[in-house]
Every structure is written in C-alpha cells, then in structure tokens.
Length: 58
Image (tube, rainbow, N blue to C red; front, side, top):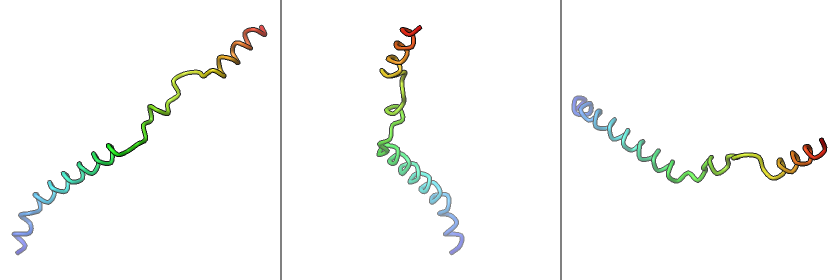
C-alpha cells in the first residue's frame, strides 16, 4: 500500500507545479493594476508655469 502511494508522488508534484503555474498566469492576466499607467512621465503644466514665472522675474 505504501509503495503504491509513493509511486504517485512525482506525478502529484508535477501536477501541483502545473496547477500553480496556471493559477499564477490567471492571476496575472486578471490583475488590472498597470504601473505604467500611473508613472509620471515628466513635468506637468504647473511646473512649466512656475519655471516661466521664475525666469521672467529674473
């Protein structure tokens, strides 16, 4: 009985890795957070207005 149960262990480990891989893939596909959408790509209009005002005052 024990020998039969231990012979399935490698198969169960592979099956567990396979299921885990698909779960992670599914979680990543369903994740709606995209950091590139929230990344500031440069100075905004308020910064430019402030710099123009500072350079005009000089």
